[in-house]
Image (cartoon, rainbow, N blue to C red):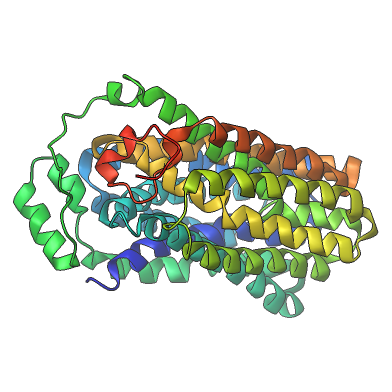
Length: 428
């Protein structure tokens, strides 16, 4: 149990990464199959993100009320059914509906697994466990989706999208079986006053209980009372704004890169490059995220992504070495800093009794921001080409300012129950 609990929980992000990113590859085949217009592509692509936004808030709240484990079971059943349904749709609107339900299933999992990982992570490794690990899984799922697209395209042609959607059911079914053996979150049990159960799980996981644990009376006012509203606003704005710009290197990447006219296969390879670079960056970032001041890591990497985005916009139309180099830097810095930090901060900001809901709100707004990005991307790319990246990159300049004026984000090495008290710019 000690060795595989965190990985099994985080594997839900593999499914999330595969499913939400597979649409970037699948749409390249859907377009000729259904003769999609630019607005229809936007709807199909955005549907899962809108569904996820709904699932995040509703089931984030339910995971706080009824526990993390029960939501783990329900969401994967829905996901398996919806994945198979998406593979057999016959028109665009059936596909939009199936993708929306898939998104809801993903939204069930994200705040639940996010809260669970944060609650079992020691303070010296919380950045790696709650931030780096789920993002490694997420990027691995994204890489798998592109590799499958490249492998299946020569065999199935424009029908490749059906296989990409349907095959997502296999890992989800396997994880559903394995998660039957997961324990409940010990911090959630303690917050509900079930201290002895929590102690047994801490022992089974080989973890030391936090020094200060108290049963919490659950109230929605805890999200907005005192200075809590500032933390909610800060982590939600940072998560959503950096994700809006970061989607250039993820789900919106194929839509934007294809505007250069380099062809389907080259577009997929470009997308794959961004994900592989991202995975390398997350692994590298895991070595430092619990060692250095997270706040300054966020500021400098956001500024770096902004600069790389300007480089893509001004060199990309030639589709040469400059485009590749700046694309690599954009993806690398996105995942080395803001892409992972947003996950860590958005659970540290909330008490255990409302951690699922607080994280769900931040992630909900984030998914809506990504949905807006991918809805606009095909139309903007069609009209303005690769230069639209400069507009998206501006989101990281705003993100840097948000972090700069939020000293409480310096949470490196701070016990989870004490992060809300951090107000200086120095690690405790």
